[in-house]
Image 1 (cartoon, rainbow over the protein chains, first blue to last red):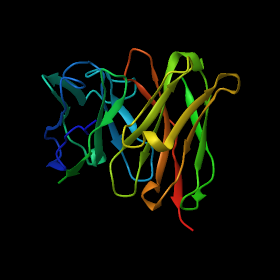
Image 2: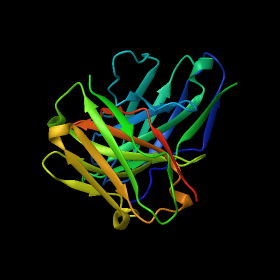
Image 3: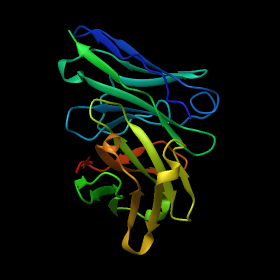
Length: 110
Length: 117
């Protein structure tokens, strides 16, 4: 199984919006609504910020939103804040009930 | 809310077998698919495999020949065994759970395993 494709890095200024893409295939992202997004800070466990493409766990800011079009899922962060600087990874279940991750995207808040 | 805690040796010698256990609390073990995921230093997350209480297992094809994941419902635990480890297997290992029918993921805190003589 191939990893999902994410940009290596994105950046934005405080208050701006950024979008991180996550491209897979019809066997995973495009064929199922089981895409998740995680935020990682160094030396901490990943934090779930979006699941099932667009659902937000309680306690996660509504500045984070998820969507999907075809084989590409997207994470949008609006009103960027310094604390959003972190690595972001996507994952998707596949039709064969395996799990595949993206390579991760480093977000820099300028 | 379900909580997970990894346990096991932090240092494993090359060619030996890595063994980790994840203890589950806070919810029924039968509701979830249980995964092992790792993150080598400076790299992204890699899914290792999963197990369901029914005995269903799925593995990452790139690791399948060396990995066994099992579940012990009576002790509310699931385990990872990875044989013939090398330095490339050095990583933070996480256990995680997904409720069946959702990608909502609950994570353990992670445990660093170093492969070195």
